[in-house]
Amino acid sequence: MAEVLLTHSNHVYSDPKQAAKMQPYPPLATLLVAAVLEQNGISVALFDPTLADSPEREFAKALENHQPRLVMVCEDDFNFLSKMCLARNRELSFNVARAARNCGIDAVVHGSDASDHAAAYLAAGFTAVAVGEPESTLLELAQGSPRNAIAGLANRCEQGVHYNIPRRVHEELDALPLPAWHLADIGRYREAWLAAHGYFSLNLASSRGCPYRCNWCAKPIHGSHYHAHSPRRVAREMLELKNRFHPDHIWFADDIFALSPRWTHEFAREVDCARAWTPFKMQSRCDLMTRDTVADLRRVGCEEVWMGAESGSQRVLDAMDKDIRVEEIYAARENLRANGIRACFFLQFGYPGENWADIEATLQMLRETTPDDVGVSVSYPLPGTKFHQIVAAGIGAKAHWRDSADLAMIFRGEFSTAFYRALAEAVHAEVRGWPSAAGAWAQVEALRSAEDAEAVVA
Image (cartoon, rainbow, N blue to C red; front, side, top):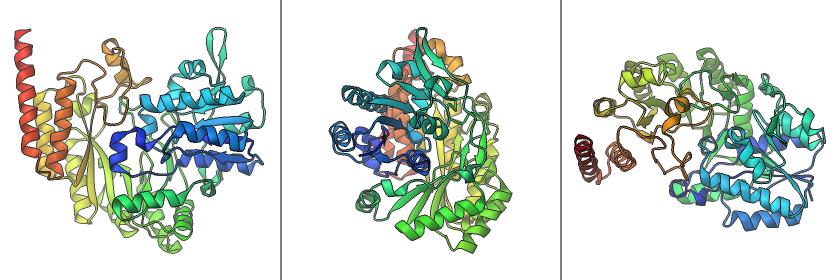
């Protein structure tokens, strides 16, 4: 039995793309909330649906086994899938609320989608929504504080939703405990990784948030704040994972890892001192991948960096408020190449105003920089962003993708959903050297020609 049953809604097998990819990670933010609750004397159980065969059936069994007084759906804020607000994840979350309600148990929820759409989650049966960073809000809730007095909480009211005063973000991250790793079935994650890839990867986060202002990026949890753990704390966490679980690899799940050159240099020194060296991959920005920073990263095990290149058209980058120059993409690629680090680009097609010439500029940039891998998406409007405001009038009934491979155009773009899906397939095929590349590009050209012809007739 446990006072609180924690769960989340990321189920790998509900997302065909993620099931094929099979790179599952434990729910880091959920485990951190569990650690905060346990630190304050609250007994916690975890139902982790990530690799469950049947999340609904297994959650019902967890309810029966633990008989909690409170259920918390706490999404992993460090997992990019939770930030995408996918329809299937929402369905799974709503199922949890329904199952808890049927047992007479209150359920509360935290996550990007719930923060943006509190009314929908309350209507689905949740008694409250934790908006913003979750640790203190969910702790006070578990301790029995009055719901109308808890900062960061949204509750039902006669007018629909009442939002309490906002919760301030944590500024001293080192004051937080280590995640409650003992609640996660690490062996199951290890088996999945070894079967699919022959090595085992675990996740860490050295920071929270992002201070940059890309106008399509939603920030319902941390806002535009950015705070980092001390380099020593991060090195200590790396050593903890290394000694306890022996991962072959680490994914730093930060939005922006190594934002400060000084922090990065100190981090490299602390990892050396602790002998915590472990191969890792990370996300950053092209303009942060300077020679000195890249050299420090390589020294302590960085093998792969993913960067938001987005476009090879400066016009599109400026429209996005990306605040980078195309030449910085080239420079980052060369700095990483010179240090033997894989350079991988996130690309985004379909931003308002992007035309075929802009797409050609992106393709030229790809062919000249030859990244080691790419992730391709289409512009996806999320509430609270300037981009969403720009395209709001053109958003139809479908406001969210069902899964991460959906790539549907939520608003009316220059080309159709079919075109952008074909373009994503062709770019992936070319960069990854697939034999299907020629046929994929033929499909792109056929769709472009057909849509151009339709536009002329119209």
